[in-house]
Every structure is written in C-alpha cells, then in structure tokens.
Length: 215
Ligand code: AMP
Image (cartoon, rainbow, N blue to C red):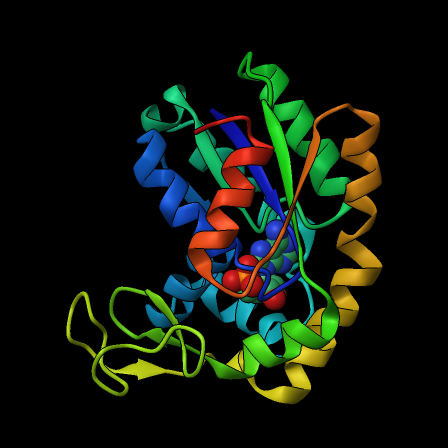
C-alpha cells in the first residue's frame, strides 16, 4: 500500500498512520516528526526548520522535498509507505509525482481525513505528546492512564510549542491557503478518498479502513 494522508493539523493523521503502519507493516513517514527530531538534536536542518515551525509556517519546499526523496529511496519503502504531512503544497505534490515516477511507483490512495475547524482548535489545544516516543494523547478525548505520563514508555507528556493557541490559528490558515488545494489536485488524478474524522480514534479508523476498501 502506498498512501498519502491529507488533512488539517489535528485531524488525526499521525494517530491513524501509526495504526495503519501496524496493520500493513509499512513505514510511517512524517515530515513533522523528522523536523522535530532534527530540532531536538540541534542539527543544521533543525535550526532552519524551527524558524518556520514556531510561527506556524511551512518549511520551504526546497528543504522538505529532499528529505522525502532520500527517505523514499530507502529499502523499507519498497513494500509501501504512509506519507503523513507530505505533500503540503502543490509544488511538493508535483515533486512527489516526479520522484515516484523515477522509482517506478504509483500512489494507491490519497486519504483526506476531514474535521471541521472548530473541532481542530479544541483537539490541538488539548493535545499532549510523549517527549520520548512521540505518542499522542488528548487531555479529554484520549487521556493517559496516569496524568501526564506516557502509557507506553513512562516518560513525561508535553505540549508541542506549535500547539499553543496563536500558532494553531496560523497553522490552520496555512493549511487552508496552501494544503487544501491538494484535495482538488488528487481528485483530478482519481486518487482521492475521504474519511470523516470522528471523536473516538477507533471510529475514525473504521471510516479510514472503509475509505481504503480494507476490513
Ligand atoms: P506536523 O507534525 O505534520 O503538524 O508538522 C509540524 C510542522 O512541521 C508544520 O506546521 C510545518 O511547519 C512543518 N512541516 C511538516 N511537514 C511539512 C511539509 N511537507 N512542508 C513544509 N513544512 C512542513
């Protein structure tokens, strides 16, 4: 399965990608996770990306596309992959078409997870992530068993800097201006399928699997 997940920040792309990764045994490639790990390790890439991420802006295409190209060329992507958070602009989508053609690959589906804006703001402001393994929680909808502690690895949960309110509003604006046009782009390619994001993670997974024609 070669899959792109589209959707606004907070729509649940990362959470669903983790579930699909287990189900299909294919890698989950999140450009956001790649940037965050570079920021944590204070690499040159991390320093550049941070300037944009903390303002709720997109990292420039020329930086982002090469990361994805290198990752897709790795051995484990031969059996398939889930791209989460890439592409986010029309030029990135065109670049992806080009590298996939070079690698003799085709996307099976582009899955759009749709969630209304008011709901996204609620979700993002309550989101907490494990500072060690990156697992995502929500203070109300998906709390950990022990307050602020990751169920999987026992580390502390933190709020992502870019989940603070002002940045959230910028990220949503960026999404509508730059990423939403991709829905039409992939509709025209006949690749688009849609799932409506539900309150409960498992209900969204059901919608996602139905959209992908999988049980
Ligand atoms: P995410 O975890 O997918 O919400 O990504 C967090 C932030 O990383 C975004 O708000 C962007 O600033 C940056 N980012 C992630 N993916 C991309 C991309 N494909 N193009 C440009 N910037 C990106």
